[in-house]
Image 1: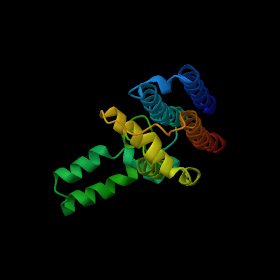
Image 2: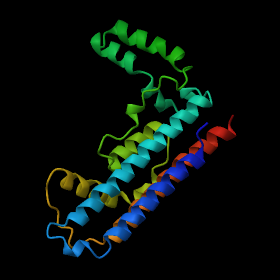
Image 3: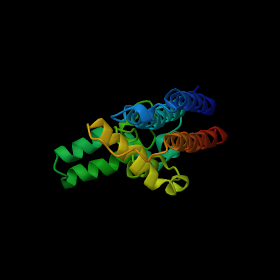
Length: 208
């Protein structure tokens, strides 16, 4: 069964790779006429931020599957991940009174479902894990966003915006950026994610 040590092992591996990147590129970025080294660090840092988040989601849901946790017990908002066909039926029937009644009647049975067929796309990142997306996903997961609040601007402007600009061929001015600090911030953000998911897994274990 996946556990919190799997999440931490993944985080440590990614943190070490970021440290290796910092070592490899140290002192060389000033020699790049087009800021290639800076852009590479920006893109790789974001890749680890998003990749670690998605891996943590997968570990977490797999743990809930193997713990045979009911979706409603893990968090009422997580029902969003098992209601896809019901939402589609409601829309296809133009939200008619009969469709709405059937939808409400189905909630009792749906609330007993486990995570075997949970649609993880409702809480995975899709190449834009900014603070708003993180907060939305945390609302579904029932996680506390508070530890990330003070880092909102750095997540949006440094981790996400710079990566978005580089990935779309723009050339953001990175001349004054402390890339060592950028890597350290990415590692810190991943640690906050690890703490959040590990804490929730521990809670599930204690309640079994």
